Image (tube, rainbow, N blue to C red; front, side, top):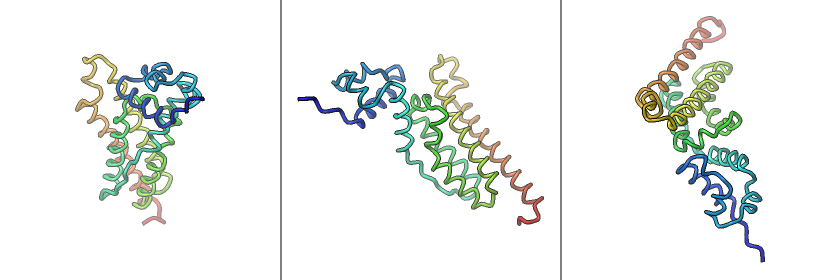
Length: 197
Protein backbone atom coordinates (compact mmCIF):
# COMPACT_ATOMS: atom_id res chain seq x y z
CA UNK A 1 0.00 0.00 0.00
CA UNK A 2 1.35 3.43 -0.99
CA UNK A 3 2.09 5.86 1.78
CA UNK A 4 -0.31 8.85 1.69
CA UNK A 5 1.13 12.09 0.41
CA UNK A 6 1.97 14.82 2.88
CA UNK A 7 -0.46 17.74 2.58
CA UNK A 8 1.08 20.63 0.65
CA UNK A 9 0.19 23.03 3.46
CA UNK A 10 2.32 21.00 5.88
CA UNK A 11 5.27 21.22 3.49
CA UNK A 12 4.86 24.97 3.04
CA UNK A 13 4.46 25.62 6.76
CA UNK A 14 7.57 23.60 7.58
CA UNK A 15 9.57 25.25 4.79
CA UNK A 16 8.61 28.72 6.09
CA UNK A 17 9.62 27.73 9.64
CA UNK A 18 13.00 26.52 8.34
CA UNK A 19 13.45 29.66 6.28
CA UNK A 20 12.65 31.93 9.23
CA UNK A 21 14.97 30.00 11.56
CA UNK A 22 17.95 29.31 9.30
CA UNK A 23 17.70 31.27 6.07
CA UNK A 24 17.38 30.15 2.50
CA UNK A 25 20.21 27.60 2.65
CA UNK A 26 17.87 25.43 4.78
CA UNK A 27 15.44 25.12 1.87
CA UNK A 28 16.76 21.97 0.26
CA UNK A 29 14.79 18.88 -0.67
CA UNK A 30 16.83 16.42 1.39
CA UNK A 31 16.51 18.48 4.56
CA UNK A 32 12.77 19.08 4.19
CA UNK A 33 12.10 15.45 3.20
CA UNK A 34 14.09 14.14 6.17
CA UNK A 35 12.29 16.46 8.58
CA UNK A 36 8.89 15.42 7.22
CA UNK A 37 9.87 11.74 6.96
CA UNK A 38 9.11 11.42 3.27
CA UNK A 39 11.16 10.86 0.15
CA UNK A 40 12.54 13.69 -1.96
CA UNK A 41 10.52 12.21 -4.82
CA UNK A 42 7.31 12.73 -2.83
CA UNK A 43 8.41 16.25 -2.01
CA UNK A 44 9.06 17.06 -5.69
CA UNK A 45 5.66 15.58 -6.62
CA UNK A 46 3.96 17.78 -4.07
CA UNK A 47 5.71 21.14 -4.49
CA UNK A 48 8.08 20.90 -7.47
CA UNK A 49 11.71 21.96 -7.44
CA UNK A 50 13.35 24.44 -5.07
CA UNK A 51 12.51 27.51 -7.19
CA UNK A 52 8.86 26.44 -7.46
CA UNK A 53 8.78 25.93 -3.68
CA UNK A 54 10.22 29.42 -3.10
CA UNK A 55 7.79 31.09 -5.53
CA UNK A 56 4.87 29.25 -3.90
CA UNK A 57 6.06 30.21 -0.39
CA UNK A 58 6.27 33.88 -1.30
CA UNK A 59 2.91 33.84 -3.10
CA UNK A 60 1.26 31.91 -0.28
CA UNK A 61 2.52 34.26 2.42
CA UNK A 62 1.53 37.43 0.61
CA UNK A 63 -1.85 36.07 -0.50
CA UNK A 64 -2.65 35.20 3.14
CA UNK A 65 -1.29 38.47 4.46
CA UNK A 66 -4.07 40.50 6.00
CA UNK A 67 -2.88 44.07 5.84
CA UNK A 68 -5.51 46.13 7.56
CA UNK A 69 -6.19 49.36 5.71
CA UNK A 70 -7.23 52.31 7.85
CA UNK A 71 -8.06 55.87 6.95
CA UNK A 72 -5.99 58.10 9.19
CA UNK A 73 -7.26 61.67 9.05
CA UNK A 74 -5.44 63.14 6.06
CA UNK A 75 -4.44 61.25 2.94
CA UNK A 76 -0.82 61.93 3.90
CA UNK A 77 -1.10 60.20 7.29
CA UNK A 78 -3.11 57.38 5.68
CA UNK A 79 -0.30 56.87 3.13
CA UNK A 80 2.35 56.84 5.88
CA UNK A 81 0.41 54.30 7.99
CA UNK A 82 -0.08 52.19 4.85
CA UNK A 83 3.67 52.15 4.15
CA UNK A 84 4.50 51.37 7.77
CA UNK A 85 2.12 48.38 7.89
CA UNK A 86 3.51 46.95 4.64
CA UNK A 87 7.09 47.49 5.84
CA UNK A 88 6.42 45.68 9.13
CA UNK A 89 4.74 42.78 7.31
CA UNK A 90 7.74 42.42 5.01
CA UNK A 91 10.18 42.43 7.93
CA UNK A 92 8.14 39.79 9.80
CA UNK A 93 9.69 37.12 7.53
CA UNK A 94 12.99 38.70 6.48
CA UNK A 95 14.41 35.77 4.54
CA UNK A 96 11.16 35.37 2.64
CA UNK A 97 11.16 39.07 1.77
CA UNK A 98 14.69 38.73 0.46
CA UNK A 99 13.49 36.01 -1.93
CA UNK A 100 10.88 38.28 -3.52
CA UNK A 101 11.14 39.00 -7.22
CA UNK A 102 9.41 41.80 -9.09
CA UNK A 103 6.43 39.61 -10.07
CA UNK A 104 5.73 38.84 -6.39
CA UNK A 105 4.77 42.47 -5.83
CA UNK A 106 1.42 41.76 -7.48
CA UNK A 107 0.48 39.89 -4.31
CA UNK A 108 -0.06 43.20 -2.49
CA UNK A 109 -2.19 44.62 -5.32
CA UNK A 110 -5.44 44.70 -3.32
CA UNK A 111 -3.68 46.60 -0.52
CA UNK A 112 -2.32 49.06 -3.10
CA UNK A 113 -5.81 49.47 -4.58
CA UNK A 114 -7.21 50.43 -1.18
CA UNK A 115 -4.68 53.26 -0.93
CA UNK A 116 -5.37 54.29 -4.54
CA UNK A 117 -9.09 54.57 -3.79
CA UNK A 118 -8.39 56.59 -0.65
CA UNK A 119 -6.11 59.02 -2.49
CA UNK A 120 -8.66 59.58 -5.26
CA UNK A 121 -11.42 60.12 -2.70
CA UNK A 122 -9.18 62.81 -1.19
CA UNK A 123 -9.23 64.67 -4.50
CA UNK A 124 -5.99 63.47 -6.08
CA UNK A 125 -6.49 62.67 -9.76
CA UNK A 126 -6.17 59.04 -10.83
CA UNK A 127 -2.88 59.46 -12.73
CA UNK A 128 -1.09 61.11 -9.83
CA UNK A 129 -2.67 58.76 -7.26
CA UNK A 130 -1.50 55.75 -9.32
CA UNK A 131 2.04 57.12 -9.57
CA UNK A 132 2.04 57.85 -5.84
CA UNK A 133 0.90 54.33 -4.94
CA UNK A 134 3.47 52.78 -7.26
CA UNK A 135 6.27 54.90 -5.77
CA UNK A 136 5.20 54.20 -2.17
CA UNK A 137 4.86 50.43 -2.74
CA UNK A 138 8.16 50.11 -4.61
CA UNK A 139 10.05 52.25 -2.10
CA UNK A 140 8.61 50.35 0.87
CA UNK A 141 9.38 46.94 -0.64
CA UNK A 142 12.86 47.95 -1.82
CA UNK A 143 13.72 49.48 1.56
CA UNK A 144 12.57 46.33 3.37
CA UNK A 145 14.67 44.13 1.08
CA UNK A 146 17.69 46.37 1.62
CA UNK A 147 17.21 46.19 5.40
CA UNK A 148 16.94 42.39 5.25
CA UNK A 149 20.10 42.11 3.17
CA UNK A 150 21.91 44.27 5.73
CA UNK A 151 21.18 41.60 8.34
CA UNK A 152 23.76 39.36 6.65
CA UNK A 153 26.50 41.99 6.93
CA UNK A 154 29.11 41.84 9.69
CA UNK A 155 28.09 43.71 12.87
CA UNK A 156 30.25 46.75 12.06
CA UNK A 157 28.13 47.33 8.93
CA UNK A 158 24.90 47.28 10.93
CA UNK A 159 25.44 50.86 12.01
CA UNK A 160 23.82 51.96 8.77
CA UNK A 161 21.79 48.79 8.27
CA UNK A 162 18.54 47.25 9.33
CA UNK A 163 16.89 48.10 12.60
CA UNK A 164 19.06 51.09 13.38
CA UNK A 165 17.60 54.51 14.01
CA UNK A 166 19.34 55.70 10.82
CA UNK A 167 17.59 53.04 8.70
CA UNK A 168 14.21 53.83 10.23
CA UNK A 169 14.76 57.55 9.75
CA UNK A 170 15.83 56.99 6.14
CA UNK A 171 12.68 54.98 5.39
CA UNK A 172 10.37 57.53 6.99
CA UNK A 173 12.13 60.46 5.32
CA UNK A 174 12.01 58.85 1.85
CA UNK A 175 8.28 58.18 2.22
CA UNK A 176 7.74 61.75 3.41
CA UNK A 177 9.58 63.13 0.37
CA UNK A 178 7.28 61.17 -1.93
CA UNK A 179 4.20 62.37 -0.06
CA UNK A 180 5.36 66.01 -0.07
CA UNK A 181 6.09 65.80 -3.80
CA UNK A 182 2.66 64.34 -4.52
CA UNK A 183 0.98 66.98 -2.32
CA UNK A 184 2.80 69.75 -4.19
CA UNK A 185 1.94 68.31 -7.60
CA UNK A 186 -1.71 67.88 -6.57
CA UNK A 187 -1.87 71.52 -5.35
CA UNK A 188 -0.23 72.74 -8.54
CA UNK A 189 -2.72 70.78 -10.66
CA UNK A 190 -5.66 72.25 -8.74
CA UNK A 191 -4.21 75.77 -9.11
CA UNK A 192 -3.67 75.52 -12.88
CA UNK A 193 -6.74 73.55 -13.93
CA UNK A 194 -9.79 75.83 -14.20
CA UNK A 195 -12.13 72.81 -14.06
CA UNK A 196 -10.91 71.69 -10.61
CA UNK A 197 -11.97 73.32 -7.39
